[in-house]
Image (cartoon, rainbow, N blue to C red; front, side, top):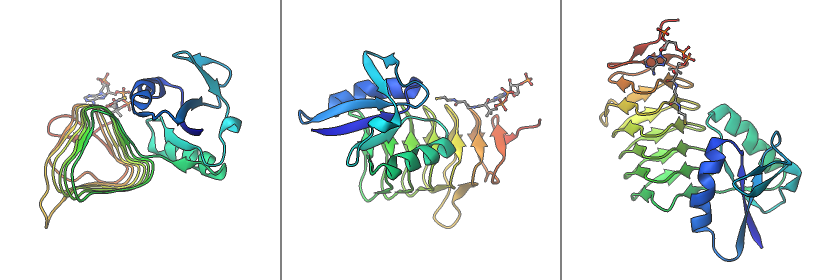
Length: 208
Ligand SMILES: CC(C)(COP(=O)(O)OP(=O)(O)OC[C@H]1O[C@@H](n2cnc3c(N)ncnc32)[C@H](O)[C@@H]1OP(=O)(O)O)[C@@H](O)C(=O)NCCC(=O)NCCS
């Protein structure tokens, strides 16, 4: 029997059990994997160590940090498991998109047309990616992110809950730099430099 593994038994892992069960076909089984929580139980499912992962299993990573997802992805690939792009039952995907391996589109998320998305993108509940966006590898959208058209987001960027990203244009996309963090509730009207954190409306670099 084919198996699909949720790797990560934290809050997101628990949130994903329902949507994944709703899409399982009769010849698939769900397992939960987590090194730290192995031996425990979540939502009635036993949590296994990584040793339970077998060659040919599909995996979905449940972790909010892009850097963590990269490390976890490596664990799975080393065991011959296959990244599974999961589109929750109430998510919606437009046409002409390129979506990298291991993407996660949670319920009520959506992607418009002609977007290009890298590896292990996480689009949490109620978030959207609009037309012509370019999104790098290991990028994270927390819940309810509004990412309008022609926005370019570089690798490892993290966009917090409820953030709004102003649209760019074909000749001048709005750019969120590599590893940048956009705080929850921020309204981003200008490019964000790599590695910095912005908050507020309009978004400004966070003073420490
Ligand atoms: C921006 C962010 C990364 C900063 O985290 P941090 O460095 O740990 O910052 P702190 O919590 O220490 O807060 C520092 C100050 O900034 C304020 N602050 C934090 N986040 C803020 C935000 N998004 N907007 C406005 N102010 C914010 C805090 O109230 C605090 O103010 P104070 O010094 O007057 O008390 C974080 O607050 C954030 O927004 N993370 C995203 C959370 C999210 O979306 N989670 C989804 C889980 S699925």
